[in-house]
Length: 220
Image (tube, rainbow, N blue to C red; front, side, top):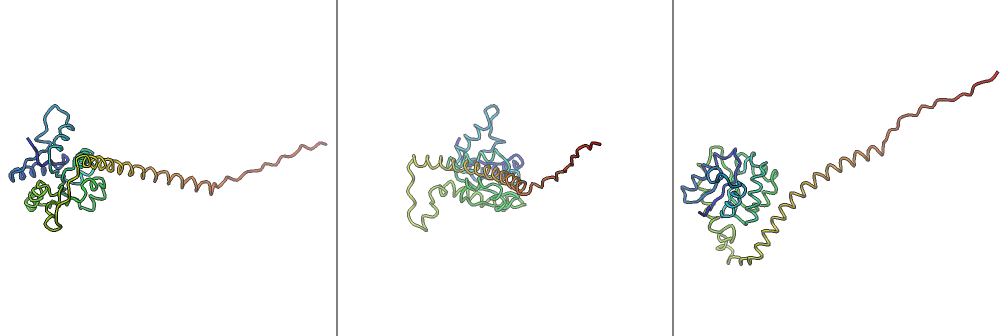
């Protein structure tokens, strides 16, 4: 069975993920989320990767809990390398805070428009979410079909080999971003050590030397 929508979330947001899946399925979409669709036995990472590969749209529930999740990061990277369409939903966090805390996610999801989930829940925004998923499933995120009427003919599709190369390059870019963050942290530590060492050399503050006179014994 083909799953059109994959819902990426952490355990703390499982209740909202289940509610969202139910409403999307009432609207006629197929969804995949871990709590219901994973099978006992096979490795969960393999199941998640396969579900992402089958999906066309990946909804990411971005909450304070999710920002520190290695699992969600892996799902976003997998979806980005597969050129999936993203629909980010902000839950209890601002867009600016999300971008500050997770620059890798921001790069992976590129220009995908995020939607804030109000404290009252999905009721006020579910119609917009459904409309967004429908627009993404119509290949608007990949071909720009919604913009064609305004700017003219759609862009030419990339050859298959160039698409593959583009996905690989994006994956390399994201991992390089992670490496660059680690290098900056190490450089900061080295700078602090060097500064302290330089201060010690410029002002060693030597301890005073005590001179003890030596006298010769007198002879009568």
